[in-house]
Amino acid sequence: MKPRERVLRALTHREVDRVPVDLGGTQNSTMCVGAYENLKRFLGVAAATRELSRVFATVIMDEAVLCRLPVDTRPIFARPPAVSATRWLDERTFVDEWGVTFRRAEAGVPYYDPVGHPLAEATLADLDRYVGPDVEDPSRYAGLRDLARDLHENSDYAVCASTADTTIFDKAWMLRGMAQFLSDLLLDPQFALALLEKVTDIQSRRQVAFLREVGPYIDVLVISDDMGTQRGPIIRPELYRQMVKPFHRRYIATIRQHTGAKIHNHACGSIFDLVEDYIEIGVDVLNPMQVAANKMSAANLYAHFRGRMAFWGGIDSQRLLPRGTPDEVRQAVRETLAAMHSLEGGHVLAAVHNVQDDVPPENVWAMLEEASNVERQA
Image (cartoon, rainbow, N blue to C red; front, top):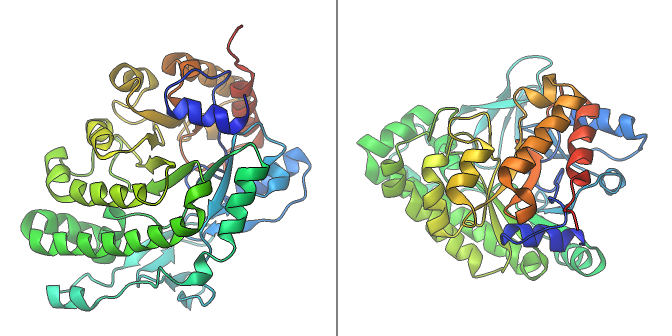
């Protein structure tokens, strides 16, 4: 099978010749800068390093690297605006286009934490005046139609597209502050709903502008909203259904109006108790399949959601990839494919999350190669 056919068959729960494999196809399945540099040296490839997310220190992987890997995906991301709204306060601190302040935790640590929240003390009147980023700025989408058409018409890869900034729940708490927003959901639902409404409107307009350019040519549309901790959902499922789910439903309905692509939703942690909700609102595939979290084992997900929800991920990035041996990685790949019955469809194999700097390139290669070598017997 060609890569695009393999991915689309898997996402529609049909048999495949081997499990589809992804690295670099989405903003949540790419590599951090250090890991990417190590992989390039391992492969002996000279290629550019382009930033995807400053906050998470991730990269857009170059075609010179991707073509050396047995992966089935290619990414398209919206561009930064031509005129950046980011303001640097010092060498470790910046304010993004939403007004959220991020600070690098300490020297030598590449990640940034949200430390300032522009709506932390806002009233409803303040929220009404808040504008947010100009998500319809044409410079964000310049040239993407031609790029998407070219990948669709002149490559065999599954085209995975994202604006990269896609969240609703996550964005709401970043604007308000996590503790304050969680309190709002219970104690000030009027404000919480108004904030979710504001963010949903902005993010929906972003998706519409993006999909007007790439919608006809893509196979997978990637959105995100982290709803889980290691043990379970961040908020009670009943509260999710009352307060957040209606906005996720509307967001997905808007996306559906502008593309026939499969909808891939990233939600970290133990989200087992929300999967039925995601099925109901029209999500086609869930990432990251965080197997180290409670109730998220491959066998449990397969047993409960076979044929109704596809999963993308499954190779543990908390312990296995950074600390395991290549042989242990290969064994985990085989066990995951067996537990998910991956050749029956319903699974795209990838690391649970972006490959971090402490992951040896030998383990990355072992994951990809082992998955690509497990084929259906004639």
